[in-house]
Amino acid sequence: MTAATPTTSAFREALDEHLGALQARDVERFAATLGADAAVVDGAGAIKRGTGAVLRSHAEWFAMPEPWTFAYELLFTRETESSGLALIDVTYRHTPDAEPARFLLSLLFERDADGAFKFVYDQNTPLR
Image 1 (cartoon, helix red, strand yellow):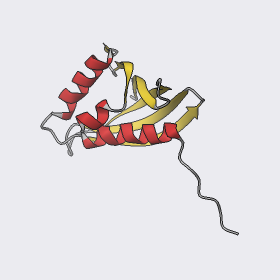
Image 2 (tube, rainbow, N blue to C red; image 1 turned 45 degrees about the vertical axis):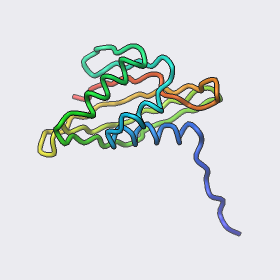
Image 3 (cartoon, rainbow, N blue to C red; image 1 turned 180 degrees about the vertical axis):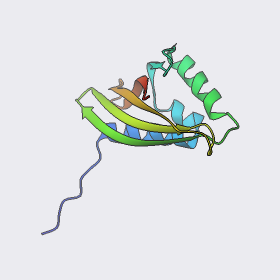
């Protein structure tokens, strides 16, 4: 008897695509993960509201000439029929030699009208 291969949920596929787009600095790929009314709260407490504002801020970040890195460990996920939540421990470096900044990243995804999970909320909590 062979062990069954675990399947990846639609939420996990959407989460993996979103995080992959971040690491790749790929604006078009990132845009495809966004829901209709996304919001981001950064580590300083600044709020970006609306999918356009979130996309613009990430496009600016992705275009930075510094070779920043975004490494992460997935700590927790929770999925329902209509939403998915992920808690992620992120280590960010502005440059390869920079002191790492760590933060907890909470990501919320909701199903859209077509049934696809889309990113709608991001909350950053700095770890001191």
